[in-house]
Length: 244
Image 1: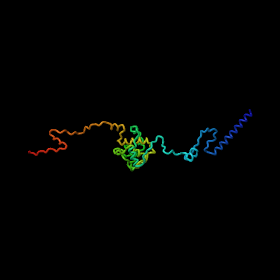
Image 2 (image 1 turned 135 degrees about the vertical axis):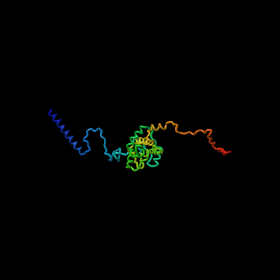
Image 3 (image 1 turned 30 degrees about the vertical axis):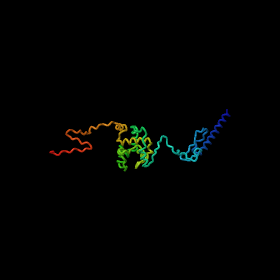
Image 4 (image 1 turned 90 degrees about the vertical axis):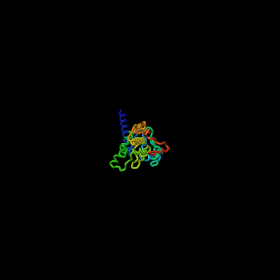
């Protein structure tokens, strides 16, 4: 029993000493987590950001590699028109809102975004009388949506182009609004251009049957005492002189 006891004590002392020596060696590298007995391949290399990372898969490249040419984020819709007057005109003609966007619920989403990003310059009614304009903090007055809509200059593609690239003193909002959020804002901007009517209200007005105007006047038919007008292409008969 004494031999077994002393043997176990000696083995324990050797194990503690060995562990202490190994841990002290690992402390030379401050990034080392210590000695791992059985990692079982659960640890992978962790390159530092923006650093050179050489491996067989990515030779002579940085750790954060650029995406492949022509790749786009998942769910992203590329905008094919360039930032130029020609691109604005082409977008106004051909870039249309996706199906299902014209509804009251989308306009309400656009209203929430409009009140965060646009109302301070364009105003609550879209008349260009935002707080920054009325307090003379902003010298250039934005255009009125009511006027632009009446001029047929508030199309889907034109407003999308302006939000994406900016125009005049207005900067680009492409980094702040996703394509879907831009469409939401566009639907609400066009609602302001219609005078504030929601899509359902405006559509009902457009589809309502024409009513007869009760204030319209009618021309009475010629009576026996009223001479009828001469037929087209004929000369009126001469009026006899008095006494003849």
